[in-house]
Every structure is written in structure tokens, then in C-alpha cells.
Image (cartoon, rainbow over all chains, first blue to last red; front, side, top):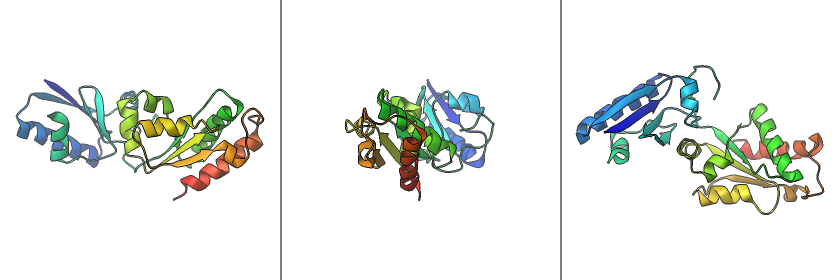
Length: 77
Length: 125
């Protein structure tokens, strides 16, 4: 099972990335957990300076971008 | 990013990587990067994180609006570290080009100020 984390403090961009990640998981039919990380102190532990960021299994795949569903799928395959 | 729980989606950052080497000029790069950050020209970031391919630091650097590498000497460790990691588009300062020679340049405020002035120019839009 993949572990997806969305780093962001809860603004619309972060929410869009979360929604896109949920859609990507659904469309791929994979098992994954999606967790939102909203506390700055927790986000900083990843070394990320801009949000929203996408983390898959502990690896930051993207920062500062609202990835599309198709972009996210590439990181989940 | 500040310690406050505020949105960090405000735009791509301008990132500053200093070689922070062990020589006099290396010390100047570190101090200049700190001062550039304090003055709001950009944000000093971790060159070691690029060398170590730390995913969060790599992803943030990929999203940067501008990258400035500051090297103390012609060995150009900061530039080479960025290049090895695949970053090809960046601004660069090499202190010898500013007349600041390794082993002859104490890290005093006047010398740091020369690098800050050059860095501010390169980071301007």
C-alpha cells in the first residue's frame, strides 16, 4: 500500500492537490492512504520550502505545484 | 518558510546556495547568503541537501523562480554540485571575479558587502 502525504496549510491549492491525488488513486485502482500534513513544523521536516507538495512513500515528488491527476498518476505507478 | 502556520503557496522562491567552504572566501559566501536572505533578496538553502539528493530540497529547488550559486574560489563546488544534480539554469558568482582572492580576503563586512551587492543584482527580476 502506498502512503501519500499532501504538504500544505489548507489553502485552496493544497485542497486541489489533495482532490487530484484522491482521483488519481481511484482511477489507478491502487491501495493508498492519503494524509494531509498541515503543520508548518511537520512540513519543514521534509526540507520543503514551498507548498503544496506531494510525498509518496516518504519521498517528496513535487513542491510548489498543483499537479494534475495525470501528473500524480506517473508518481504512483 | 516561517515557523508560523501560514500559507507557503505564495510563489516560487529565489534560492541562494553558498559553497560555505572552509577558506576565508568560503566564509564570505556563507555570510553573504545570510545577508541576502535577511535583506529579502532570496532565501539561503542547503547545498548539502542537493549533494545528498534530499527529496524535499531537490523538489523545492526544481520549483525555484531563480537560483543563485555563490562560490568562494575557482573550484566552483556550489556550481558543480548543482550541475551534477541536474540544475542547469542558475545565476553564478565566483568571488575571484570580484577581486576577492582565496587566502588574501578576510571575511570582514566590506568584503561581504561586495558579494551581497552582486548577489542582489543577480537575484533582481
